Amino acid sequence: MVAPELHFGTDTPFTEREQSALSDFWQALETSGHQDAEHFQKLCTKHIGRIHSIRDSLESFPAVLEEKSLGRRERSLFTLVELIANATDADYEMYLPTRSLLWRSITMARLNFWRLVRYLTEEVAPDNAELFKTIEKRIHACVYLKLAEELLLSVSMDSTLPRSVRDKAVRSLTSLWDANPSKAVRKFFPLLEAVWDARRNIVVSVGTLLGISEIMRLLQAGCAPEFVNHFCRERMSKDEGLAFQEFLIGVSSEKLHDLEQLMAESGMTSMTPEEAEEALGLEPTQPEDSGVGVESYHFHRERHLQAAARRLRHLPGPKHTAEEYMLVYFLEDFDSEDTA
Image (cartoon, rainbow, N blue to C red):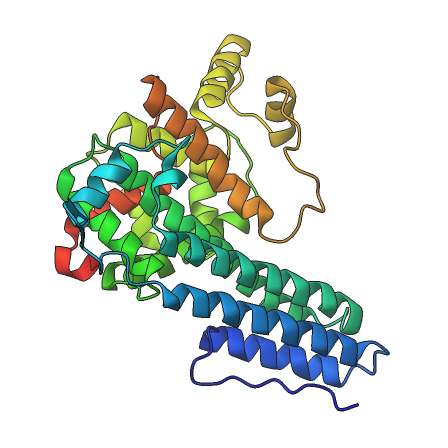
């Protein structure tokens, strides 16, 4: 029986980078001599077909703001901004357009497909470090895309932010859901990728809790200088500073406060990660084999939920993550037409 070939049509939902990574994997699969190579190829082909099906379903729905009236009801950017601003983390999914849910489905389908490809690489090319690195980049790209949507949603849901910022955030959101990213998204997303890639590749030392060594490691790991510069400017709110500290050290501002008190009481000027974990009673929040990309998602999601809880309950501390504060600043400087 002839093994299936890898073919990308003009309507493929895969990006050029994804196509290149898949081609490398396919070549490794074909030359592996693995007894199940043909079965693995068929399995991948089926998954690719399913992703095409979800993409076709996505495209069968009109653009989010295309259908603007139904009887006496009107739908516009204004009504969508108001709807999302009145939602919370507990109920916002009940107000999202169908197209947004399908966009999420195809994003997760692609993420799970790349996980499958990685598992198969373990079988057919366990020593191909370069291929593993390429595939893991594709996994993280899917995770980062999901996180970018969550950043935009968080900003859109904060009714305390200026209306102009929320308008731009929702415009950028709809451009994602419509699979036609705006200029703002196309400019901001690579910055986020560089920030998150750098953060997951550094080792946190806790130290004096100032995060100085982490800042240097971030820059050395390829973090976007704009991100670091934003949180090193003179005029910055206390909450922004705390959010950046949470990002650098990976501990909530409440726990950082506890550590500062402990160090002051004991006369310590610095602390090792092990000492900090013992002092706070911290334990791993997920198993070591939780999967590529999960740790990156958890790192942001945990900080986001903590910030959202402070916002909801009017508690002290950062009301957004560092990335969300950066996004607000970014949107303020962008023209409205560049977010559509």
